[in-house]
Image 1: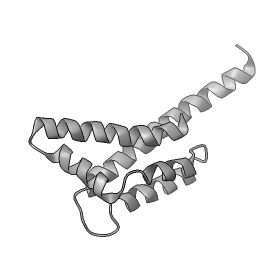
Image 2: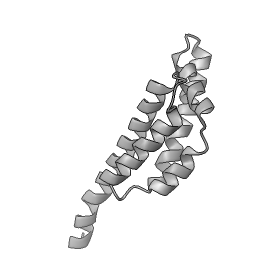
Image 3: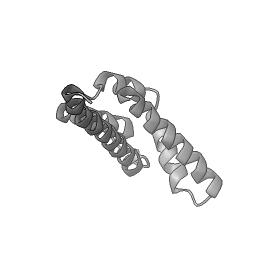
Image 4: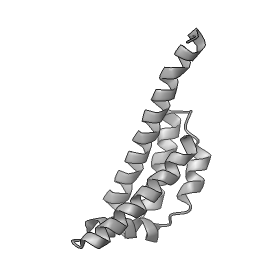
Length: 111
């Protein structure tokens, strides 16, 4: 292994950790505010989190992530939170699947 590749390896791992962290933070925002119908709404909260995380980690592709977020309006994000909070196992499974889709859309921007 060359010296250059040794220097790049930690950056790559750090970027993956940051991407996972951002995805987790956005997911928490959706779950926390998903059932809330007051402003700013889950889309706006997720948008603010993406922008704040991009300031902290310039390697994140903020524009791509904001574009990916546009595929999930407030109604969709609220539905995910509602499904996850359901006592019905099938509904929870649907919520988990939708949540995985949301996180994958964000993660794809920084793969």
